[in-house]
Structure formats: C-alpha cells, structure tokens
Image (cartoon, rainbow, N blue to C red):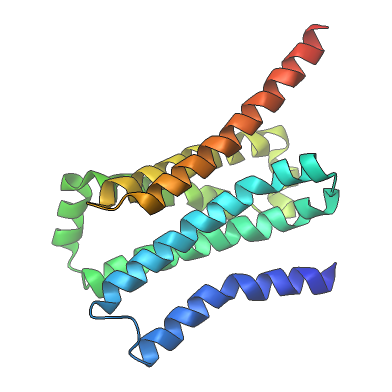
Length: 195
C-alpha cells in the first residue's frame, strides 16, 4: 500500500512538473501565463472530481482501502487551487491589489473562484487525524463543503470560458453523476431507516 500511495503522490505531481519544464523550455505557447492559469485550474477541478469519486469507487468495488487516498487527493486539489491563485496574483496581476480587488468585485467568475478557494482552506487545515478527532461529527459536516466547492469551481470555469464550453461541460457532467450517485445512496439509507 505504501508503494501504491507513493506512486499516486508522484503521479499527482506530474502536471506541475510538466508546467515547470514547459515554462523553462519556453513550450507553453504564445501566452504562457494564460496556459499556466488554465492548466492549474484544470488540475484543481480534476483533483476535486477524483476526490469526490473515491467514495463511489469504494461502494461499487468494495475496495475499502481506497479511502486512505481521499485526504491526499483533496490536498492536491487545494495545492493546485493555491498554485492557480498564486499565478493569477503574481504573474497575471503582478500583485496590483487595486486591479485584484476590482476583478473580485466586477468579474463574477473570479468572485466565485475565490470563494471556492476560501472554502477549501478550512478543509485543508482540518484534514489531519488530530482535527478529525477534535471535531468529531462536525468534521464530516464541515467537509461536506466539498460539494459546494466543486460546484463553484465548475461554475467558475463555465463563466470564464467564452466560446468552447466542452471542458466545463465535461466537469459539470462528471459532478452531476457523482452527486446523483450520492443522492441515490442517501435515498436508499432513508428507505432502510423508515423500514
């Protein structure tokens, strides 16, 4: 299991390694900052979807050990979200705080993206075993924010894209399937309780 976990960890770092080599080798196209923003945003959403897929995969396959990867995958979603936001602040806006504040107030896709990042912070902080013990049942309630965050992330991407909505549509469909699966499980549980 340790080797498998190390492999997943290494694989999760490959997108950032690819971007670093692309940046150093000048292979990110005519607008490298836009490429960096797009790719880090894409990987943030990808890791959010992978994290949300862990429970359905466990239920459908009875592979219970997969749950051990969920926390790490969620932290990678946070890592790529922070990278995405840092690139926006530093490379795209060059820490021009007045422009950043204006963007947050005038561009809804930036507002909702920033809101999603802010909501990810307490989830990342409380992802340790110590916090799980300390919060008890409240931990699970807090971490249900992941559904709101994933939805906000998809909306952020959808509102950002001006013409080709293929990628945000794919993320929206994946999220819809994952949420439908969860609602079906909840319905089954409620029916079992009523009996």
